Amino acid sequence: QVQLKETGPGLVQPTQTLSITCTVSGFSLTSYYMQWVRQTPGKGLEWMGFIRSGGSTEYNSEFKSRLSISRDTSKNQVFLKMNSLKTEDTGVYYCARGRGYGHFDYWGQGVMVTVSS
Amino acid sequence: DVQMTQSPSYLAASPGESVSISCKASKSISNYLAWYQQKPGEAYKLLIYSGSTLQSGTPSRFSGSGSGTDFTLTIRSLEPEDFGLYYCQQYYEKPYTFGAGTKLELK
Image 1 (cartoon, rainbow over the protein chains, first blue to last red):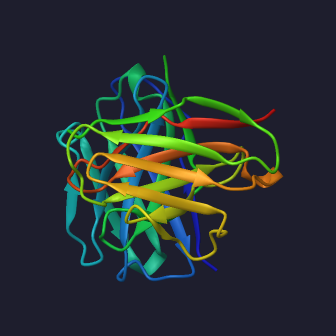
Image 2 (image 1 turned 90 degrees about the vertical axis):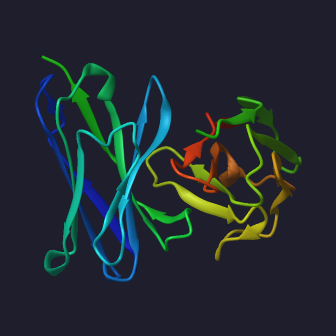
């Protein structure tokens, strides 16, 4: 059974770094692309980037300078790190699985992140 | 970036009715379009990809059509579990982009 679950800090201060973990089960990270998508009040759903099955990454230029996606295949985990947070980064962050075609067949339930002092 | 415009943003219907949701792309995206459903407290669910291909497990009352810039999601004979939010997404080019969503509510 395919499952994805995001865990994160909930509240982050402006200018700080956000770290979110996506823990997966039921499939291998070396066989699928893993994406990060966020949903904010200001911009709705935004694709942030992905890590390919082979481990290389690609980012939305909107976030490229401050976003990093990585993984630990031994732990079945994918990581998002984004620095220089602003209040506009407040929203729900999702990990999602894809096969590299561009659509996402399984999503986590998301983790709410609030950027506030 | 490819802009995706969904309409309507809100739709009220009764079980048994049929509804259609439109998604328009700002440039031709061939058939690189997916539809997702979101219900409160649940994960996003892929319904349709490649414009019209039903994802495994998607009921046959759902159908997708269109290519180029204009796409439609149709739900025939609505069931109670169909009420929720619907989003389109283009994956013709990166960054992948989504529509703003359509809320389908029970009339």
